[in-house]
Length: 208
Image (cartoon, rainbow, N blue to C red; front, side):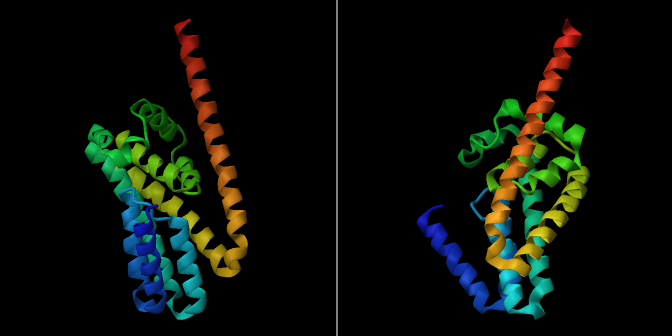
């Protein structure tokens, strides 16, 4: 993250902390930027929202709704970029390295087979991989309604779990969550490798 951008982020979050009535809107707006692949950490926003809620319990629900809505609409933005820009997306530098053209069909087939499980697991994976999955869903022309409903369930599960943990345990669970995310990432990659291997073997058997 660029020093200027990082400093701006810190100032905005500090402003949110001292202007609690504006905090849900600020966090919501920052998360929308993540949908455009700008380096806004959903995990940091969840942590910030939960800590602010601990200090200002009367704003608990607005803070949760702000971070939840921001995370969800951020996903829809990433999906829409893939869906409506299509191949043009690879001409944009900030997106070009996220998803390779030859990977789209493979991941799309994985989406079709495992559906909402893909999105549920994907929401527990750090920013880069998470956004790549949503963009791939768009590039693979997954139906909008299917993506929107599946991701609504996935987002509800992940945001509720993380917000609850941060609200009740604060910084104590950060390392545990990071390790958990890495485990889920490893499981997800294993799923993809297993699926692609079986698909390749099945194709080879049919052509034999």
